[in-house]
Amino acid sequence: MTHTTHPTVDELFDISDDRLRERASLKWSNVDVDVLPAWVAEMDVHLAPAIIDALQNAITRHDAGYPGSAEGVTQAFSDFARDRWNWNIEPDQVSIHVDAATAAAKLMRHYAGADRSVMIMPPVYNRFYDWLDVGGVRPVEVPLTDVPNGGYFDLDGIEAGLKAGTKVILLCNPHNPLGRVFSRHELSELAELAERYDAVVLSDEIHAPLVYHGVEYSPWLTVSE
Ligand SMILES: Cc1ncc(COP(=O)(O)O)c(C=O)c1O
Image (cartoon, rainbow, N blue to C red):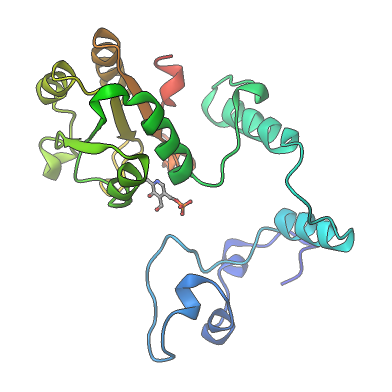
């Protein structure tokens, strides 16, 4: 595949087993040759042409110092958010972190206050428990209700947790693993509760660009400050 033409989806995913096994990444370097690692978070895909160009460009210039201005990426995110979700977020409201886990742990540590707890709604992305651990906070679990039919916020349970002193709710929307996209109405109900008890909602929206066409998706900050 050459990056001078725009690749098709088939081309992007057309990589032989042998080539994948040459990769130094965790997924492929960590298994014996008779094992086919099937986890999905590390995708078996060619890099996008724009990424190849940017990396090759940097290498040609020996441009490998500490990260400098993030203007390009904050502007790109702002443009993407406006085009995709009609969400106006200014580039200077966007900050760059090593990964979602590091940012979330820092924020939870900061906002949890004396209570040192964070509310999560299982079944949820299992690494959330590690994130809380790193943030030095304990989980208050308020499971989603009616999971076989989609999974819904247990507003009474959430209110009980907030009343007991929890100041941070870690939300996953779109939800991993349920695939649920919470409606604007559901998010508003959660926002009202959080506001009433002076709590902060941290919304992990990492899967938002994967929502099916025709499904309404609302970034948290378009629902509540
Ligand atoms: C809900 C959710 N948040 C965060 C992450 C972390 O993504 P990364 O691979 O960037 O660590 C994942 C990865 O699966 C995820 O599902």
